[in-house]
Length: 406
Ligand code: PMP
Image (cartoon, rainbow, N blue to C red; front, side, top):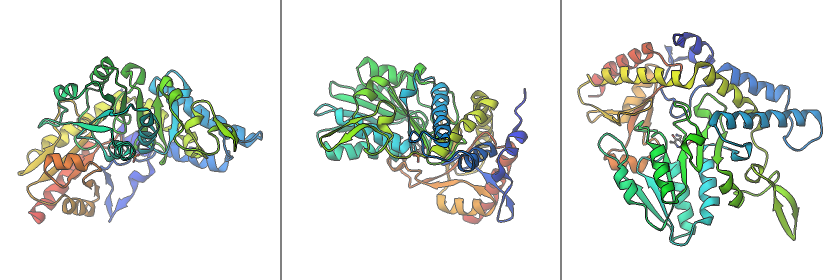
């Protein structure tokens, strides 16, 4: 069956809008993807038909809302290949998922422990560990570098492990370079040294097949808003053996078994880590995002995005002064670039005038920018609904703006 990009686009109301009278060409999918009508309808239904707080009431609405939320948890479990719903924790996003692990799992780290990160991490996988370090100055952070293509130096990665290493945490796919890291190999190596691994999957789950059982990772974090789902919802997958040992991250309603001023006991998994009222309306809608992906097939989405990226990169390389950051053979649908000494911000501003929405700046990866010796890039990134015509329009827009800026 051929890839029906026209049919896919029709599911996204926003794609028919105009920017300054020009057709919208949305190439900022790494920051957030657009949302199909089916997800929007499910959110509307969550407010109009079934809104009641979850896990709180005996009444019909509360039971229906609770069932929607717990069905979503089962869907995420199945999508990820996790073995139990107890291992699926709903959070506000990748950021909160990683903060949860750093704060809670991190509190169990031994004296003088060492954490391995990489230079290509998003701030969300750097700062939570630094916050832990500010409470535990004995902890050390060690950082894996990259080569010129933007691939991790695996020999260096292996050489950083020693008897103090207590955690390795790295992205599956870089949000700047697009590099798809060999996470299975990296996890296996960490495990051979007895070290648990967190994978930041924010840029992987929307684009490539992910199965936590196959990866055997200890934790996996991602956000629904980057994968056609509602905003403000993330997932933390964690192995039950770890989650059982970990103290709660936040306290409040829903995460307790019994509270008294003499002492409080906590709820079972996964609720121990879900204090307060979650975005149950959004969570209830997320299966529609998984349906959207499943109907096309994640492998087909990946293939389509790869074609767009390769097509765009080939045309971009014809532009004098073009520098593309991230040229790993295994790369996902992101192109970060600069042209000559033109400022990324100026390019982004002018592209916007032509309806092309790209990201500019450091992309929440300042250590990587420092490593590359630049202050930022322009970043074009693709999703299931982008087309070759849009790539052509983007390239044409570049050809229009570059003489103005040079
Ligand atoms: N990690 C990576 C690799 C990302 O690309 C992002 C989002 N840009 C995040 C973490 C943070 O995701 P969120 O803001 O949804 O928590």
